[in-house]
Image (cartoon, rainbow, N blue to C red; front, side, top):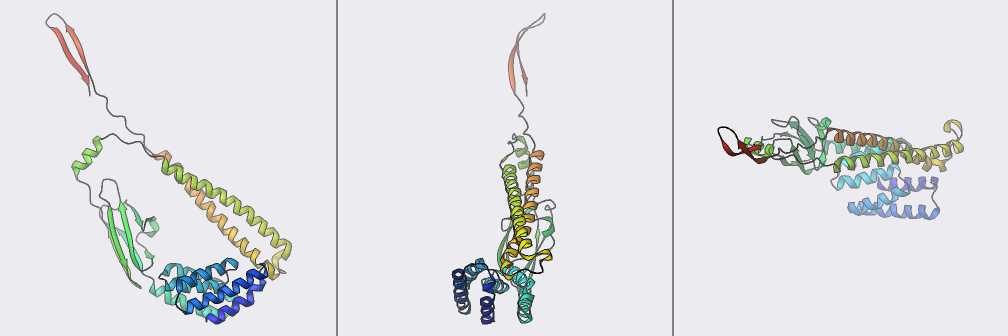
Length: 312
């Protein structure tokens, strides 16, 4: 299997627009990577295959990267690599497609899944898995993860924070119910007696900055996409029926710019909207009650002296 993939890479490489030296280095590096893979040196082989992919990312290179990631325990990333290779497998041949499909079926049976459900006190809790916030679609659903320990946290106002380390085993489905314990009443009363702190504006500005950068990046990728599209139209003619093999790399650029622009636009719009919502929903701090005392003189028919007058 490894030798077949190496031969296919060498046959397809001349279709690239890179210079001969780059192709020679890629061929040699691919051969070194396959030898490291055969020796079980998965980390070194993975690095070599990724560098080959920077010259040209073929289905075979994607497949070998996924093989290395699978043997390093990165099962979720490996599955994604196999699926990308499968999407382009028909360009290689039926034997290669069958090998990729077999790898996907085997790997899916190995990947563990975590099901997180809301329990008492956690109906509106914000949850995070390995430091990444969980969206509503991830709650109650089977989330595929790599084997090993994973940190689950949850927090909600007026409740003690939840922390749990979940150990996942290959092929298993683990269910975790998140429950939050309410804070004691005396702590809530004491906390409510303190003046509110002014809301921080750091988070909305950071989120908004990320959104603005994503929107700018989307615009840049769109311009690059248009350039790549024009180059293909000029070289391939109407409908792309006479497209030379040398334009394959330009077609790959077009796909990258197209999908990259869409993703960056979505992230930018979402981030700017989130930052705006945070700023609008932030509450102004309450002013603490003023306390004052004054000595007021009193003179009348029945009394002469002074009394204390105050506001609390």
